[in-house]
Image 1 (cartoon, rainbow, N blue to C red):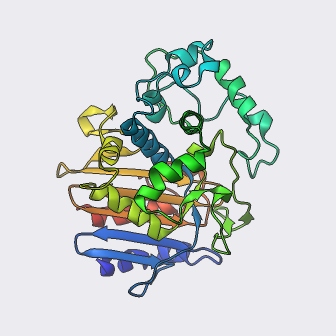
Image 2 (cartoon, rainbow, N blue to C red; image 1 turned 30 degrees about the vertical axis):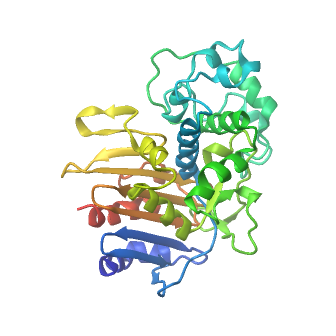
Amino acid sequence: MEEWIRQVMEIPRVRKWAGTPGHEVSVGVIHPSGTSMQVSGSLLPDGGLPNRLYEIGSVTKTLTGLLLAAGEEKGAWSRNDVIADLIPEWAESPFAGQTTLLQLVTHTAGLGPVPGNFKAAVRDRMNPYAHYTESLLTEAVMSETPKAGSRHRYSNYGFGLLGWILARKAGLTYSEALSRWVLEPLGLSSTLPGDSLPTEGRLQPVYNSKGKPVPHWDFQETMAGAGAVRSTLADMLQYIQAHLRPNGHVLEHALRECRDEHYLLFRDKGIGVGYAWFFYREKDGSTTYWHNGGTYGSSSFVSFNPDKQAGMVILSNFGSSVWSQIPLIGARRMNVDKLATLLTEKLYV
């Protein structure tokens, strides 16, 4: 396993990209033969645990999905609850009165990528989510209309809204709810949204796709569920391990719920959505689950295949170009998604 990972990392375009000054790309692979972790192409020594914090961007959505599932198991809410059931002050909103949590977690609520009033709240275009307040979220929701028969449309808005609703119903902040109901049961001690986790010099400096330093992203409670979490390679591998081997885990039912089929995008190809996780059918009939993430200064990719008991995590402190937002498709510039494609070809055969 370590040999073919090394071979991929030594491909000239990969080596050039990973070796860019300031770039630290961490790769972790779980395989029936063992687990391998590499940072910037160097194999970590036995017992070495990388503790550098990365922004994981939209991989946060999978944790928000797990929060939904964990709360369902506790009886705090149901996926079929409409928003107004949980937020009574929005009872007069036709959208809140008809839109379910299941629609939010599967990107089928008919919402756009960001709220309609989002642009007006941006004070720093390099840190766009920092000032989107609860009053603005309420204003946006109250102006929405129900979208009957909505198809899948990827939405940061929807997941920010979902995370805020769940935390509000739990009587906690998003960080507190995620920590108590998801992260602590998973044993992820180095994973939390934004400033909730002491960085102590561990937070990676971040750069855009061209290597220019950029600021880390900050999130209000309103959008935290869409992309606020920071984590380490070791924690993300432990997270994937829980999805691969949920039997007997305290979150077993919730973990399984997250990867159940909740919306099919392409039935004949076995492509669909669980609780945030996207999945597709491999040629041998097994199923691979994945999600990627990106901020202006970070990019990430996680995937796992329970049938093969294999998974991988890629974390980078270089941001996404527009091309890296198109998952598993060839791109002009080397990026995390392109590296994920190269590793996937080896890992899930």
